[in-house]
Length: 134
View (cartoon, rainbow, N blue to C red):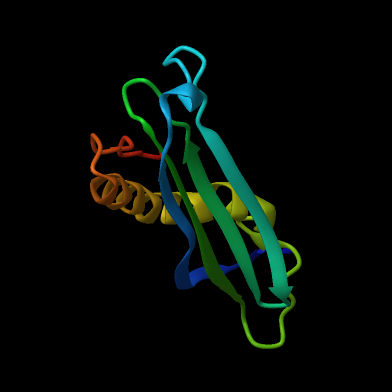
């Protein structure tokens, strides 16, 4: 029987690479109906055993919240397998972990960063919902 390798993914470090708030003039505000939250997401392999996941949100200024908020995080993760083994064929698959596992780990950090950033901007707190993965 050929069993798949079980990988252990670990968060090595989390960095806020961008956090900003800009108070905008009323002429730049979007209506609540047309405002869309921008999502930033990507990943990059840094070497055979580590990779980075970038995740962020961009809230436009609106009539109800006249400040644009943007926060972007980079999480550096490592993958550990048995010594001498390749990372190919691991489970959960690498791409799945980047899309689901890494973002689930990073989301609470992004949630806290946006909440604190909105407080510093002096506007109604941005409170993202708590997520639960089944």
